[in-house]
Structure formats: structure tokens, C-alpha cells
Image 1 (tube, helix red, strand yellow):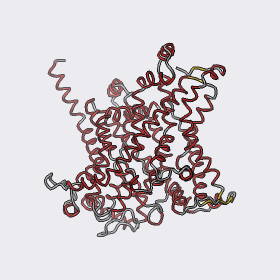
Image 2: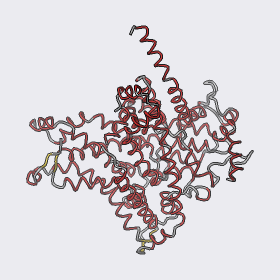
Image 3: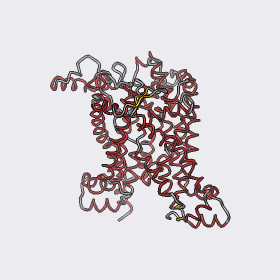
Length: 316
Length: 284
């Protein structure tokens, strides 16, 4: 049902209808629009957050242009985005595996099992991983030692000259500069996202059993079934997740703040753009500069959204 | 085909899936390791943990005092979080349903302008707003209050909810509304007696999503709250991580208790969790 058009005269009589949408508008205007406009305004000021502020035109933006930390943080976030895209694979494969099961009962049980980890708050999962990364008590090092993978890593180290893994010395995941980005990537292994799996499964449900039977008659292999039947059908879902993931990673900094602190860990190697903005604003008290950083970040995200809409079209 | 061969074929088919089951169990087991660790460590004091880091201790040696400690510490934070999260979910759903009704039923003058007023927000990244939002709350004297979290939370999720709900309300047959209008029902009555029952599943799903994202939020509470009595779970856990680094059993017990409310919610709303999450997200 399309919305019913109301003429201006009738609308004047039905003015009360606007009251229905007014509360939403007030909230959004005050807590979303006003801060956004205020950010644009204050990005042209030197402002420590108090009453005093000084108009400095484009000085903040010129400073950003030469801000090494900010630009190298885009390098870090690019690596994380690439890694996160690869980390979508386990969820997709798990969804396909669950969907291919013949028993509907088990399909349902597995869905429930996939969702169960969601009851642990994200923050708690992060802190448990922080504990896993601990050099002496952490389980990551214990598992590497117990399985002998540590020796492999040490050999690879001497082969490639990384200089981070040494025999007999516990690996300090979160305090060795060269290991910070790898730690940010491996946390959450095996990288199953409950919402992702459920969304892919919803897409896969569109495939009827007769499609599979036809494919089996034609002698299709597992891989061919995935490539020609399953993958095309969940393309829409994968695109949605991809867009959410890229934008989320680009602007997110909670993970880095909690695992590494507000300066991005040893040598600032885990610094991402959002964290730098947070750091300038709430640690250094340079609120004007932080607003300007936020503006630049905003334009990057806007640009990415534009690219997404143009090339990665999501068909509804 | 005789009945006997049929069962043989069926049995054969059942075993075909065994490798898949094995892989799924392996992956799920790894996914559940953090939960397992949290639960088994919460039953140990530090000495037991050092001696035996991997396996759970028996119920008789279980350090129940850890749970008591965790509850004492986390309990007030949970109360604050429940208050904030429930208020946000409740009020933001009411506002969103009303706004979605406005857009779905009538094309009033200014319809398009107002629709884009909301839609553009989807492009605005929240991250650029944090600093000015902090300043706004400061000037409104809302810093260090739970109300600050509530008003921000209500405003934050509006766009997405209105966007999804509008589609669902447009799908409700117009006859229902017209019949109600002939009976003299006001708009609010139509929302209550037609929209709420007809769109209940999607409203439930959106409410769960809102609840989850608020429950997991720690950034705004971290910036806004100063007093320990007001801490929500997020900030509380961050301070706990800083303060009690040595007593792992107590920390894990606190984590475990922090997970209990969502566990209870999960038991009551399992269908919405498992079926609704995906369906809602795809339709939107």
C-alpha cells in the first residue's frame, strides 16, 4: 500500500498528524543534527572545550595535512578492513555447511548454538581475548607451546628476520609493536559472526531442494554447487554485510581503545583514525582539532558510501 | 521400491552428513572457547588457576565466593544498564512506530523533505559527532547522568527503525485502517490496535536489536559517566579490568554475571533471536 496523498487543504485540517512525527524529529534534530553542524563550525576554531575559542580559519585542516599519525592510521585501518573482509569467509562457509544438512532439526539446533555466544557482552569477549593475549597466563601462548606451533613461528622468524618470535621468551602480543596489528586481526578466532551466519542462512533458504537435486543429477561437485547456486543467491546478503563492515571498521575504535589504550599501544602501531580523533579531543583537550579530524573522516566515509552505492549496488 | 531399501537409503543419507556435522562442531567448539574459559575460571581462585588452567574444578571445590563477589560488584551496574537499556528500547520504539506510521500512511505536505531529513542521517558517521555531542550534553547539564545516555540512545537508532518499520506498515491492508476510521478511531488508536498487532514480529526484532546494541555500548557511558554509582556495565567492566588485574577468578565471575541478563532474555525470546534477526535485517 503506497502512502495516501493528502492535499494541502485537508492537511491543514489534519495538522495533528504532524504531532505524531514531531517527537522523532525533535530528538534527531537535537542529538544528531545539532552536533553534526556544531562539528563543522568548531573545526574552524582553536577550542579547548571551554568558553574561549579562537577563529583560525583553515589552520586545523592544514595541520591535518601534515599530521603523520593521522595518515599512517589510515594505513592501519586499511589493513584491518582487508583482514575483516577475509574474516567474513568462515561465517559464509559455516552458513553453507549448516544449510546443506539434510536434517531440519539439526539446522535449527546449530542456529541456536551459533547465536549463544551473543549472550556474552562484546566487551566481555574483548576482555577475555585480552586475557588470552597475556604473555605469561594467556591461552594463546600456551596453545602455541603445547601444539609446537611456537617452534614453527620461531623458525619462520629466523627465516624471514621478523625479530618478534624467540625461543624461550613468551610472546608479548599486545606490547610488541610489530605484533599489534596481527593481534587486532587474530582476536575473535574463528571469526564467526552470529548475525552474519543467520543473514546468510536466510538468503540460502530461498534455494529449493529441487535445485540441489538437479545439480546432483548433473554431477556437480561441492565447489560447483557453492559457486553456481549458493554464492549468487547470498550475494545480496554478502554485499550488505560488506558495506556495514567497511564503514564500521573505518569509523570504529572501541576495539583499539580497550585492547591497546588511548595512544594506540606500543609505538602507536594500533592507531586508527577514530582513535586519533578521540585521543586529540578527550586526552589532549584539543576539541577544535578533533572536530576537524572528524570532518575529514566523515568525508572519507561519505566517499566510500558513494562508491558503495555506485558500484556495489544492493538490490532489495 | 520396498520399505526395507528405503530405510537403507535413508540411513545412508544420514551418514553422508557426518563430515559436515564434524566440521560444524569443531568450528562451534572453537567459537565457544571464550565462554568455556569464562565459566571454568570463574570457579577458581588464583592458586588453583595457576596449577590447573584448562579444566573445570568439581562443584565441591568450586569457588562460589567469586560469584558472590562478582554479583556485589556488578549488580548495581547491571541495575543501571537495565534501566537505561529498557528505557531506550521502549521510548525509541514508540517514537519510531509513530514516525513510521506518519510516513507509511499519508503523503502529507513536506513528506519528502521530512523523509530525507531522516534518511540523510544514515550517511552521517556517528564518530564525527562524539566531541560536539559531549559539549552539547555539558551545556544541557546532562553530563554524568543516566538521562544523557537515554536521550542519545533514543535519537541514535531512529533512522534505521523508521526505515524498516515504514516498509512493514505499508504492507498492512488499507481496509483495516479505513474500517477503524469509520468507527471513529484516532491515529493513536489505529497505531495501538492495528499497527502494533500486525507489525508485532518486526517490532520485536527491532526491539531486540536495539536492546543488544545498547547493552553492549560502552563508548558513550565511558565519556559521559563519572560517578561510580551511575556506571553502566560497559564502563564498570572497563574499570574492573584496570583495577583487579590479578584476581582472574573474580573477574571471570563478574563477566559471567554480566552475561546472565542476556541469557535470560535469550531463553524467553529465542525464536526472535534465531529467526527474527535474519529476517528483519534482510527485509530492511
